[in-house]
Image (cartoon, rainbow, N blue to C red; front, top):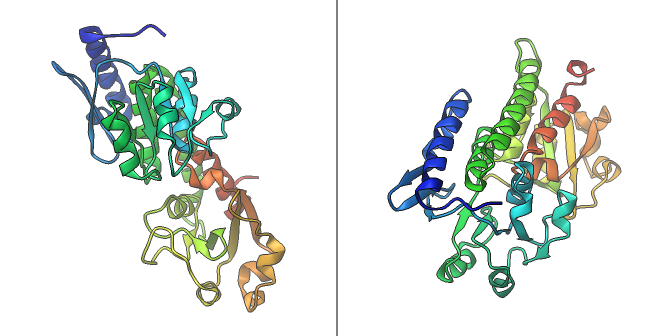
Length: 311
């Protein structure tokens, strides 16, 4: 792509911010507050509240977490990505890029790729990212906690990479799909079942997590919504006492759980979800990665909780 530099770049970003702000305002937030142009360059604020100054649109980006990788490709900036973490496997093109490690990054490999920018989630230790910053490589952290924030970060990445139109179109489409689900699941008279999502044996989603957010929007009540952490480890006795009406277990690289294994747990035969055979599986990536596919996860979960609404 052709580099935009100096005042030309700053003017372009200023226009992009205004356009994105107007579009995003209808969604209940203003993405434009995260980006501004000044005489010193373009300033953006990431999800850690850090202010980053960029002189140019990045031409070489390294993504060190699966979520930003998916967002970058989804807004049409995949051609800028020159390296990814070990777990970035979607879309397929990402799997063929140079791997740079995961929770432990290969600093020398990243430096060798000569990136203008590193994009990360909050899973990578901050100290490792700061080592890269010390070598002159800026980094941006995307660490969203709600579906609204996913849309904000999609629009932010669009501005960051020069793909504003694509990012806004994507976010608008996703917001429409979320609205279509909510119109059904949150309508008056819809009975909300008790739900238990297990992403690893006895580990679930608590308050403030995406899993909790998705259950609520899908028209359910999370049995762990009042626990003390975002990702609590609960006990068998807790699940039995909460008596979920629907159990969802996720399938991914971390677990080999099956519906049969869950149903055979001691004392679980009396749980409503087990006795009614309401135990279902979902792709872990659709509820754990904070990118565009989170809406796929919402739609699938809503259909599991309320098949009568999605026939």
